[in-house]
Image (cartoon, rainbow, N blue to C red; front, side):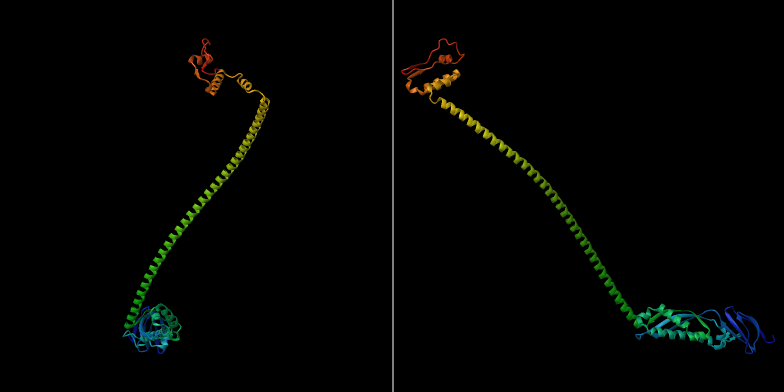
Length: 354
């Protein structure tokens, strides 16, 4: 009606209405009437924009790698963006009147690509493949400080690198090398495990030997202690034997002294008896033998006297012709054998009779 139309925008858009070269209205998610012939509308998204990227770069060792990732940004200064890039919106066609919104993402990707190249040129292939997180962090910091983004009024919300991949031939070579390294590591692990087993077995045997040595040492100590005890016992026994020998020696010495004293006493007694006998013999040396015989027979038993008589007859047997001794005669000679009657004296025939 009269050339005026009504339009309504989403809350995710920042709207700037320009009429006759002047901003007449701006805000988020506006709705208003406008005159189509004299009004231009700039629509700038206020939400974050995700832009995936994939490009090839070269590492320090001249190996080509493919970098895959995604960055997220949003527009924070709408006036700067309107002044630098064309975000004029065709309300009828519901599309932008230029391709600047698409070029904005390409500009940011180009900035990220340049900074990624700068980082990859400092890394070898193996390190670059494994440095996705570190690479993303470094690129994010440098992109955030980039002057062009500040001039455009753009804030980088995040950048992530999903993968850094070499070409297929290089990948197969790395896989083969990694496989060989893994096999070598496995062999090394097996070698280490065997060595550890051998070392453990050696320690066990060494502990067993140390235990045996300790046991033998204890046995030797016990044996030495037993020998010391036996030596002490023998020393005590020797001391007792020496004491006993000393006592026995003293006893024998006392016995010897007693024997010598007894022998001396006996010699003294023998000397006294010899002196007494010598005195008696001296006094009797002039006495007749038959007198001495008679004196010896004095008080002698009758049996002994008879025996002496028979002995004297035996001494003079050559002078006796015949001697008859009857039982009656012997009975009469033995005291108490008879009353003395009918006793007969022995008669010697053909010789001297006594």
